[in-house]
Amino acid sequence: MGRIYYLMGKSASGKDRIYSELLGNPTLSLKPLVLYTTRPIRTGEVNGQNYFFTDEEKLKELRKQGRVIEERCYQTVHGPWYYFTADDGQFDTEEDLLGIGTLESYGNLRAYFGSDRIVPLLIDVEDGIRLKRAIAREEQQEEPKYKELCRRFLADSEDFSEERIRELGIADRITNNGTLEEGLEKVIAVMRKL
Image (cartoon, rainbow, N blue to C red; front, side):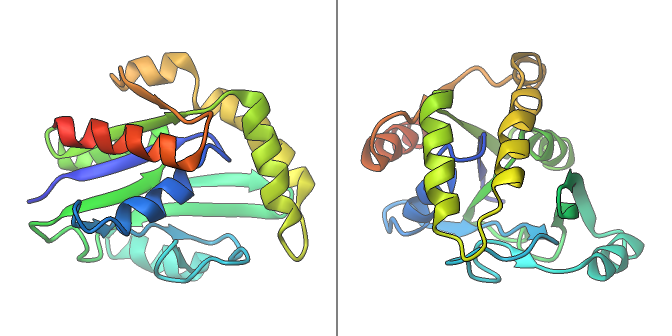
């Protein structure tokens, strides 16, 4: 089986754009690992590409079938939003996969697949830069959700605590305070070292 490269980072760290660029790089030959979510689709997102956008009924069905590998629920200002990974056939490949998620999902995937198959790629951005990026992204939405942006920004401090990063044995971080191209080059350099 191929490796699973797993991008992680706080909200507005640039991981979605880096993810898209990595998938589009023909020299890397990566296949997307698509997670599921019950949150509403954002402007510019594509179902089946960014996420499988679904509902709680589908999640319950997958749970009953024993196909949910990991799941998280976030109590947002708009109600509960679930994010989860399902064993839906996309892992049955010799190709390398590229996924995107949280420290929690990484830990659960590592426990499921083993640390020799999953490679953590932790993106780190200075908080001021990250906040400006988050606001700029939200301004592009048809209905900006600034309260949710603030909740996520604050929750990231806990979700990506230094203690949690250490517990998961993630030693390396990829700084993405500059341009997309600079961050992308750093990620590719880490991937090619392996």
